Image (cartoon, rainbow, N blue to C red):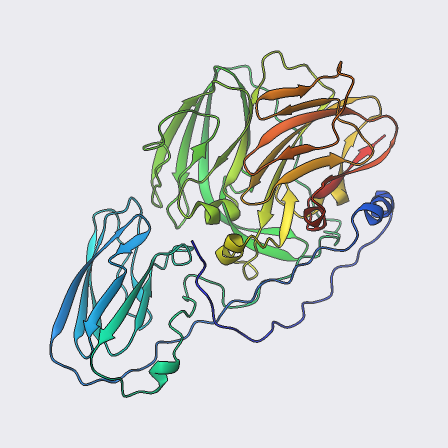
Length: 470
């Protein structure tokens, strides 16, 4: 799917100065190591998006005739998606939604239908058509995912010269940001009041049936110092709750949609036909998703609603750990979920156009830029530490590395690849999007051990932190 081109806009004003970066305590040691390995500071300038334009007023002689066209919404497309009308005719569109989720139709002239549920119908009076007119679904991401319609004319001639210069690819007011996105400084200190997300792995529960409610919630969250985004989440956080169990355990998840859009869920840890449990549900609805874990690993779960890229990229993902049989105990156990941010305007959802172009503003562990560089994870010299890593994507790879440490244990995508008794060791845990595994290490002595995604551009975008070893 190609993003809809947006008209050019003037350059955005320079952002305010970045917050102060005090270099005290552990931050000094962190900075010295990172300067040697991570040259430069992240801070991509966000792509500028076009400002919506009103439809040009076009005057043609009215013919007194009416053209009626039946249009069906199905498979994230309009059928037909191109309508030809004699110039001067009045156009009436009879829209029927055959998709399993809501849609509407908005024209650049301002005419629109209400949102239609499955099998819903509506009639749209488009008025007298004098020139090419664009239409789209106004739900977030649908237009950019290709749900568009074009009305063209035959015969006649528009008398308003402004029609020729009108940009019918203008960005929809409901579908894309109208102001420049903020910039992220991946080195900025979040300040003394900041609390990092708890990265400790949950304890494996003793029961064999695990019931949980996951509520879809649209929340405003800070994702970097001074940068807020409206995230679509499970239970208010991105990533969502970390679940854990053993092979043979049953998970009964009740998904409740408290958001304003349709959403669904897909658990990679379960093996079952997706038709019913992964279907999208409208706001106010709920469904029960039940699966039994039959294979070990750290598994992704995410929103199953199209465009999936937009929903995952805006926060709808989490992890399920299914312990391998006879998993040895360790002294400390952490979970890191890598993901990406594609910023929209401050306080608005992420930008699907950036997601489609693979231009992240930040790559992070556990939902916040560089949080563990300022709030280090802890360990003691000589302790065995296990780090579970899931790469939620949606686009970037992960090459997890700890500066100054070797991995004597590596488990990736359901397979033991290294054990402590083996003579070799690993330097990275490499994971493609949706991949997961864990590594173990024993820190040899006290000190500050930075960890990074060794794809350096992404480390500089915020995929970094520190183990503070006492």
